[in-house]
Length: 383
Image (cartoon, rainbow, N blue to C red; front, top):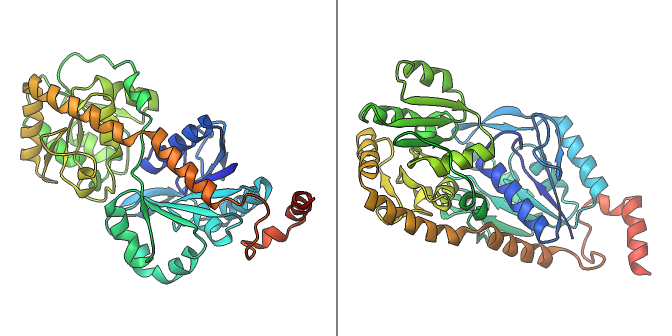
């Protein structure tokens, strides 16, 4: 079976959706499926099974700046690749995002599986529900990654949705070699923007002892301002954008992973990664994070935006080895519920349910079914 996995966000830029697209594709390929990922790339493709569709353009989306590709050139490349590849099934991630997923959803040259990741508030869903409902008729199976994602999409596009939580390649985190530390170390990895709460974590660091180190990975629109604000604090190490391998090693080596997000998180996949790495978690008590973590069971959760509560939770885990052992043991068990292999098995079932076994017998899904190439293929199948 040939599966086209389409991502609207640049696959060269770290992000939650991009990580899910690439991780799911790797697992499906291990299972013997012929999966090709299509999406924008700002630089070399991150893997051999990725087909780049051009560069991205920074676009405001869901309180963030998303690396989308809504330009006509990307749409034309998408159409060309879909025509050439003749996929049996298309899997769209965020099918209504401007760019290749929207293009492919409107053209629908093959049965479509759509996964919705976003949560919170979205002007697109609020004001664009009519065209979305029309395009949604082309989707054969709809998936949301959390109840928060469902709350966003359902009012705009009513219908039946299956909930499939995001997955993590657990072995990658459990088998990694940890990064060396010289003292109590907190790790933050996320885009440097308001909704990720890095300002709050830096406020909390002002209440931490001189022996505590904070690793800050990634970058964003607030990086220069935040670095200038903390220029005199030698405890804070600004790592910039790091590789996936270094991210896993630092996550495994840190004493605490901190996720102080303020809003806009539909699912806490970063928390699952920390659990799989046996690293203690201190995070905001957002609904998306509570899909994964439970306060004082496998993590410590604090009110979003409360720097004093965040500092107290960080100090608590850094001072209590027994608490850390209890939380990380529970977290390791919880991570088993989010195996990428189990997620891939379910998606494979959905693909097989939607994919035509021989010649598609219903109404044409696209004018491309009438193309000379498809016509020749149809004649061969009927012999």
